[in-house]
Length: 263
Image (cartoon, rainbow, N blue to C red):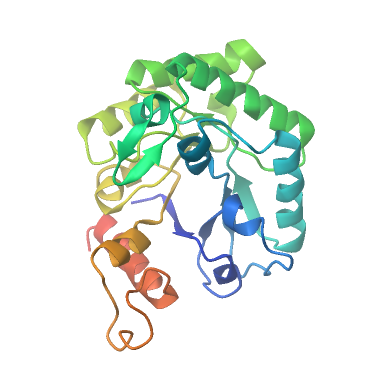
């Protein structure tokens, strides 16, 4: 695995003590009056999946988001990049309903409209804040749709994704252990879009595709601890499970990287 791995966390305080690259959501950071100083490089998740799941639209304006990103860059430090306010293309996000116990409002738009809004948002954010390291994200529901999204960046806003240092790969977290995820990545590579960040990649996804990604993130450790009621030895007296536990998260990260590297 050659991908740089960012440990997802809903605990912003870990920025000052984890000592490993982290992926932290704006929705968690925005409530902090005093922000921690980062001890290692990190990146910002815009919280798009939760926004669309809960509301079926974005409730945060681009100017508001940019203002917070500048604050994170200046006060936390070590900010490597930030995700845009993109529009995921999973059917449950578009159509609404219930999945894994979560209710989705549904956007009731087309995949093409989600892609258009994703591209236009990137254009607006980078116009408002050319000083910030905001990355473009490709979205789609089929391999061809992802390639159309690449073309849309060029035709709609004149951005050539083959020249970008990093491009986010959206809407694949539920496909990462399948052949379809590999096909999408291969097709993007063939189009010249090679520096990809895989959102929400887990152990199987990293084992299968990590050598084709520039970076990836995952918060799966917390879900795993909560769903299976896992605790580290000696932690049972401290908490019911290790879903919010830094030592557990770091141990999980070590295991994921070892598995992805075939050790």
